Image 1 (cartoon, rainbow, N blue to C red):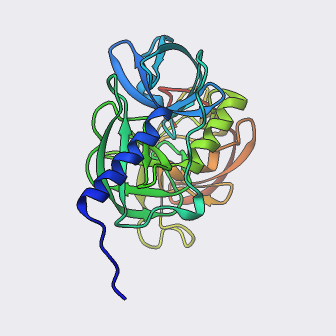
Image 2: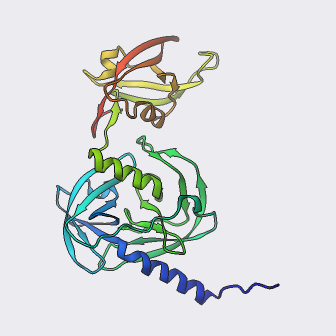
Image 3: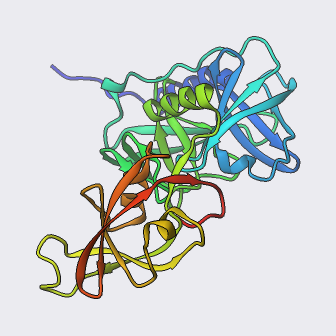
Length: 302
């Protein structure tokens, strides 16, 4: 029994229909001269890229699909996952149709990035080139899965969706977390949006150290082959008060090995105010210290 292959015209019509269906949920985000995109999550709220709002000065507006421009309030953000949540003074912002997590894309599937950098929705076509499991951004953000699409993300598309051929929203595109851009999956977008809604800006743990990944000479320590060389310690920081000094090698926090910034951020996540054990190597000897995790703010050391 033969199967009829869809014509190029039919495929094109299907993709155009998907963009048309997604467009009402895709908004433009305006901060002065800067242009980005956002996705309606219902209840008058829009999720977008945090980095697009960095220099907004508190002045943000949203352009809806019908051309209406409405003021928006920044509810909070999480630079580690490059997500921010806005409340928009407008009616009719329904939740985008997020894809079923159990029916995600496959490598080779055609997908579309949708943006609203201008007055109308725009799109670019690509293919899923790689999929992966959970990972952490370089700033320690926990992201549920990895979706890599061929091609670079156009300017102004950050904060907009990646959609499948049926118009379902697979995730939020950002140019910030990886070279060339990546897609934050729907599960992470909705989880972080809920946390921001509840708590505002998400807080990250802080020790107050400047670090550099390093490998240990063979035979230095039977349990660890690498760690984080401490090249600086902020004054009056949790690390300073714990007795950490420049030249120490941080091997583990509460038993979890630390070989990268992501490891360090993961070990401190959700631990603000907690006392945690630090395993450091000092002059070739393993030393156990204890630090009370502080709150990391922008422009601070790790």
